[in-house]
Image (cartoon, rainbow, N blue to C red):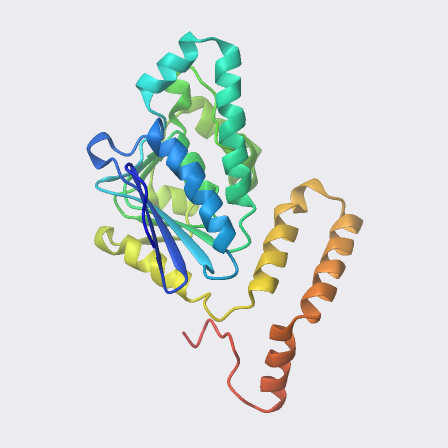
Length: 268
């Protein structure tokens, strides 16, 4: 597919979309054109998701994943007053909502530093695969800001409230192994294999039911905001809808005929 971007690359190959933040000389700051291009790329992927795209990988070019916001841009926004900053956050949250609501698995391939908004975007993915050299920091406190790009929502859900407060208040740096122990990272791999591993992980969803994945992702995303009874009702609705899919009927037919399943993660 044609790539219209200057600070970001979007590639779709065999159903896996890969977004690469591409200002390596500046450690891929999320500001200016890159921020706008990421917003556009998320919309484009949303139009393809579940059809020609069944998984998404997010990574960075060069030695960093994303070093956070562009400080020069942040200063300009701050000088324009709180209303300007709030408007900027509203735009960010619109993009983040589209990203979180993508009906396909999203995988962060964290190849290096993920600081500030970079950390926030990494944990906004369904899965995080990190290089051994990766570093993570909720660095907002170093410049007198609070976390953004959804970290106030996602971080406590991953590590618990007390640990989230510690990471936010101290703005300290975690290495890949500690991030793994805390549940922020699914896997830690060799530095030169992180993108390959993330893309291979994404490719294994190729034969999964896109309907079942989308329903399960949507239901689990709401788990922390719903009561038990509401969760049970949503689960029942999801199962009823999934059971009516052509994929489900074909999978049952294959099972009864003792044929290999359409989707078998262990087989791959």
